[in-house]
Image 1: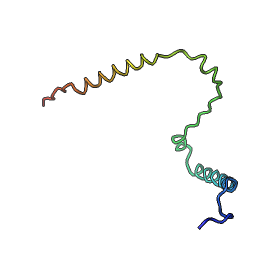
Image 2: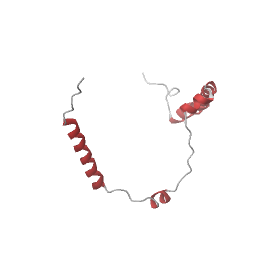
Image 3: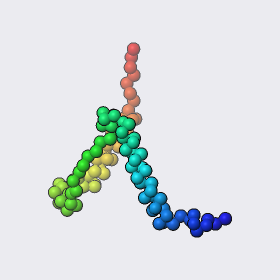
Image 4: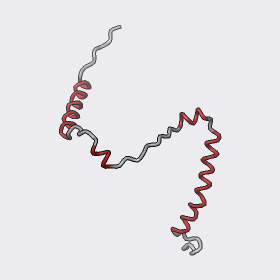
Length: 95
């Protein structure tokens, strides 16, 4: 059975439902935060305000990092060291 045009979800109807739901969600959030004590809230949430930085400023001042081939060689070296440590027999502990 097809839904009647009255109940068919359209973008406008969905938007209206969301507009009704947002204040309810905000009120629920306020109620929840009022039930939590200050020190406990400090442990749960950390809010940091960061000013907007222009992309050009962010990228122009940055020092060039290592090249991809340098990083790849250090990763390969680290993997080889890890493999050698895994395959090295461990000394037995004498009691």
